[in-house]
Length: 620
Image (tube, rainbow, N blue to C red; front, side, top):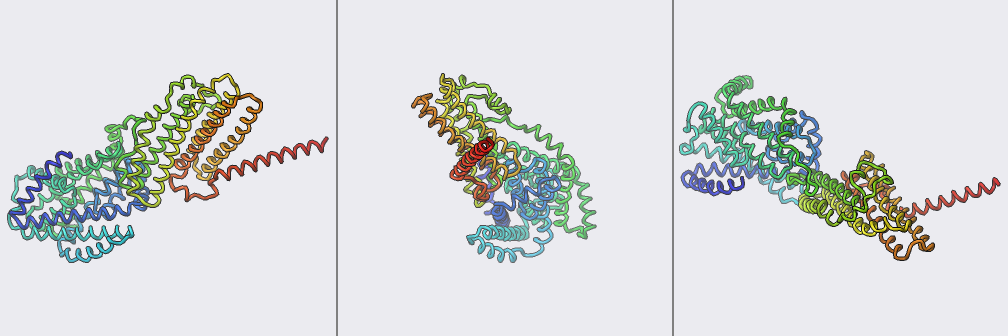
C-alpha cells in the first residue's frame, strides 16, 4: 500500500500540472478541494484537542449498548463532520478494551449515517448563498483564538478555522464548476445502463481514496451536479462510490491496531461493500423511494442536489437496517475470521499504536500491559524462590508447596528476566514516553505512576535475584536455624504476593489500601522480629558471624522486595483511576507511621501481659 501511494503521488502531481496548464477553471476546482481538505484537517485537530477527558468519558458512557453506540456514531459524526476521526477514536478505544466489538461496530454504522448530514447542509444551504462571505469573519476569529495559550481556546480556534476553510473550499468548487463550460464534463462519459453505474461508482471510490475523504467527494459531486456537469443518476453512483472508498481509510487506520481493531476495520469494510452492492442492485427502487420521499418533504422534482442528499441518507439507512439485526452474527464471524493470537509472554500484547490517538486509550493499554508484566514478574520470582508457578497460582497453601529449590539451581534469574520480562518492560517504557508527549493533566499523572509501578516490579525481581544465591544454599544446609530463617524469608515474599492477589479482587478502594498497608505493617514487624532472632542466635552461638551477615543482608533484600511489590500494587490495582496524591492522606501509611504503630502494639502487648500477671497475682 505504501509503495502504491509513492508511485501514484508523482503521477497525480503531473496530471494536476497538466490540468492547471490547460484549464484555469480546473485550477480553481482543485484549489477548492485542497482548501476543503485542509479545513477538514483543522476541524479534526480542533476536536482532537478536546480528547483529554470529556470526549473519552462520553464515548465510554455512550457505547454501553448497541442502540447507544449507533446514536453516538450519528451524533458525533454530525457534529465533527468527520467519520475518519470517529473511526480513529473507536479503533483506539476498541484496541484498549474500553468498548466491545459490537459497540464499536454500532459506532461505525452510525458514523456512516452521520456523514449524510453534511450533504444535506451543503445541498440545502451551501450551494444557495456565497459561503465565502461567512468564511472570512469565521477565519479571523479562528486565527485570533488559535494564538491563545489556553488549549481549549486554541482548540475552538482550530474548529472555527476548519469551518471557515470548508466554506471557502465549497465556494471555490462551486464557482469553478460554474465557470467550466467545457473540458471536465463527466456527463459526456456515458457508457450507458449498468456499465455507467459501475463506472461512476468506481470513479467515486477512486476519488475518495485519493482525497481520503468521502465528504470531499460528496461536495465535489454536489457542486458538479448543481453546475450541470454531472447527471443526476451518475451523481447517485458517485455517492455510492464515495461510501465504498472510505473502506480504504478504515483498512489503513487498522494497520497499527491489535486484533480487535482489525476486526472492526473488516466489519466496516463489509458494511460499506454490502451497502454499496445493495444500492447498485436496487438503484431503480431507491430512485423511486427518493422521488416519493421528496414529494412528502416538499422537495421539487428538479432539485437534484437535495434529492442526492436524500438518496445518500436513504441508502445508508438501508445499510444500517440490513446490518444491525445481523450485528451479533457479524461479531461472531469476525471473531472466527480474525482469532486472537496466541499470547507471547515475551512480546507486548496490548500496546497498539492506535491507542496513542486518545489519552484514555493510551492509559488503558499501558495499565493492562503493566498488569501482565506484574504477572510475568511474579512467575519469575516464584521460580527463583524454588517453587513451581502452576502450583503456587492454584492457591496451594504456602506451607504445603512442593520444594523444587534443588532444580531451581538451574533457573537463571537473569535469563528468565531477559526472556519473560525485559522486552515487555522496555516496550512499556517506550510507549509511555511517546504517550506522555501527547497527554497532560490527570492522564499524564496516571502514565507517570504506571511507569513508577513498572520500576518497582523490576526492583522486586532484582531483590529476589540477589536473595536467590544464599537462599538456595542455606535452605538445604545442615543448620536448622538457617533453614528456618530462609524459609521465613521466602514465605514472607509469598504471603505478600498472595495478599496482593486478594486485593486485586476487592471492590472497595479503602479496604484495598488498608489491606496493603497491613502488609507493610507486617513487613516492618517481621523485620524487627528477625533482628531480635538473629541477635539471639548469635549470642547462643547457633549461627556463625558469616551466616548472620548473609542473613541480615538477605533480610533487607526480602523487605525491599515486599515493599516494591506493595508499591507496584498500589499503582496498578488501586490508584489506576486517580493518582496517589489525590488519595486521602490518612490512607497512606509511611515507614515512620508503621514503626510508631509497631511500638504502640508492642507496648499494648506488654501492658496486657503486665495486667494479666497482676490479676493472677491478686487472685493468689
